[in-house]
Image 1 (tube, rainbow, N blue to C red):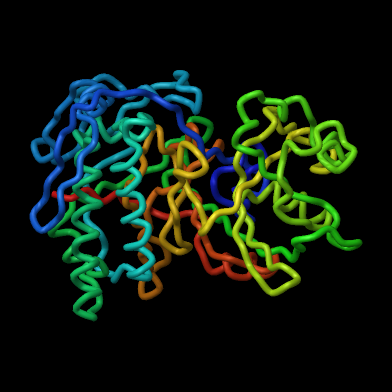
Image 2 (cartoon, one colour):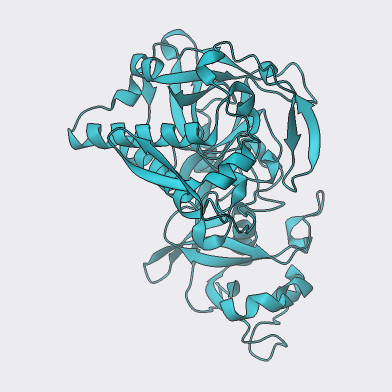
Length: 420
């Protein structure tokens, strides 16, 4: 999926969605009550988030999931919203979600990578629930009685199981579909696309981090900088006045009218710059042998225009150095660190941050199950009840990326796991 409109914290476009709308990784500051509600589980340390937020975002509905085994919503249709919290359309939950069981095939994933993403997503709830009320929306699953507390309970249980299994050097029980069916409510998620009522399986697009060669210093070959805004100067919004063409004309370079207001982070070729602006997160291999991740931070507020070639776009992004691939987060230094192979980007507002997803694809002996966490999002998913974007990996070239994702499904049956 592309970040052509609004890069998420993460990365590039999946090849199969190269022209899709872009990603966002932002949220909204919101002061909340200090009242805390403890979420405690057996064998899991206690964590808390704002009870006031939980109540408000659950709209006072504390439905009992177990009392509604068929997941048939008796409440009013769910009102789907876009990234600006504006109403888009209504849908009955029973058109999209229903009770199910996982097939008997083993679930494939890297245990340590899944633990990494689960832990970081859970920590985001713990650290930023008050500042980012978007994550406290129950969304569509509230029509089945699934609350934010259920999401936290699911994350905590999976983290505890993985830690125990890894410590005992054994294949985790989370790869066993019988264990999952016994310990989780399995919810089948059928695609809902207003423009195409025939689509029933989710579209699975793919995205990645790409590596670029660059230099710490300006050279004849690497002469196009990527910039970081200085913290003490962000507030006056000077950078919103300038197009990408203005920046490339040298306004931030010595002698330029805004010299000193930004910090050059690295130097790329012009092609490298355009790819970095589109990808959102990049891994730069410097000519001195060092390697560093960089992630988009803020843009100049100018819209991406479909149909206009990248070099002519006015939108420009400023970057920050980061220590890992980054997913969802309401600000640059709060974003969730994620791993390929176990991360999905999806509709955080309407489906929910931290939802654990299993996708099923293939036939017979070739049937496969993969698990991942919705720990990223983007403009193409707000709203989007019919698609997920799978973080495929880190690649040197688009050719390598295309070769790898040719083994992955374009469409899949999707299940959401909720701890019983």
